[in-house]
Image (cartoon, rainbow, N blue to C red; front, side, top):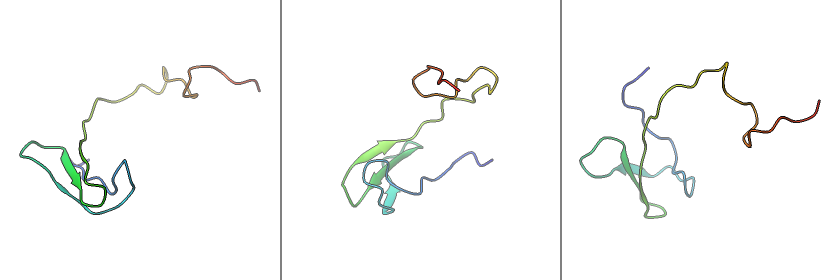
Length: 61
């Protein structure tokens, strides 16, 4: 796994015209929607403890 991953599209507009922004790692700017954003790795999840539903509620079978 690479220590520095590059985003493929803007999380706001979906365009691919991204360029590094600022001097800190993980900061990007989108030339299409003119937004700047920062990507940050939080950590790894434990598959045994993660809930499969986004709301945390189980669905009926």
